[in-house]
Each structure stands twice: as structure tokens, then as C-alpha cells.
Length: 137
Image 1 (cartoon, one colour):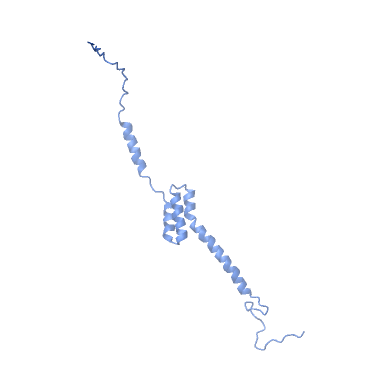
Image 2 (cartoon, helix red, strand yellow):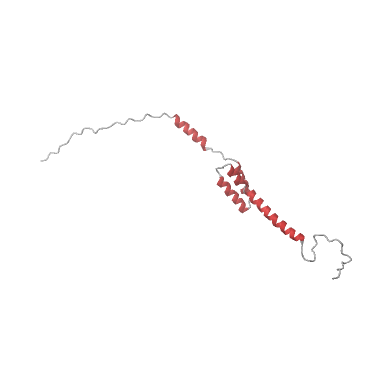
């Protein structure tokens, strides 16, 4: 076969991103792989970020763990960042138990109350009831 002639205006070196005559497009194939990889990477990062409040609550054995999980799930489904921020705040801070000191005060006051002596059980005998005789006529 004869050697193909190159057009006189064509450059001697063609860049690699130009589509070759056989139809293979290196840049297109690279961008497909890159885009799919980035979508997977961003998805993993997104789901990992949304699980941060639940991990925080689980590690600290938080009493409001279910509330944190519900808020994180709502943030995931609604794409509303306010739910996620609320989940982080609930997971990050322990809500103080204000009833415990009141219970302690009530128990201390109850222990200061004098204990009455136990009542003695007295056997009560029925009083002598005079027998009434019914006279028959």
C-alpha cells in the first residue's frame, strides 16, 4: 500500500486529545471514568458526613441517641441542613438532668422526718355482752 499523504496544512504532531481516525477518544473515556469516580467519592463523603452525629452519640452513649438518629435521617432525606446542625448539637452536648437534684433534696428531707414508733398490736377481746333471753309465752 502506498504511504498516505498528509495534508500540507496539517501539523506534524497532533495532540493526544484530538480524536483519532479509528474513533477512539481518550479524553472522553478519561472523563467518563473520572466523573463516575468523583460521583462515587462525593456520595461516600456525603453519607459519611451525615453519619457523624450518630457516631458521636453512639460513642458517648448519649441518652438521646434515637433523637440524634432521627434528626440525621431527616437531614439526609430532606437535604435540610438545619436538621443536621440540630443533630450535631444534641449529640455534642448532654442535656442536664434538672430533676435529679430535686429528687435528691426530696429524699434528704424525707430521711430527716422522724420515724413514728411502730404501733403495738393489742388484742381486743369482744366485750361481755349480756345474754338477752327471749321469753316465750
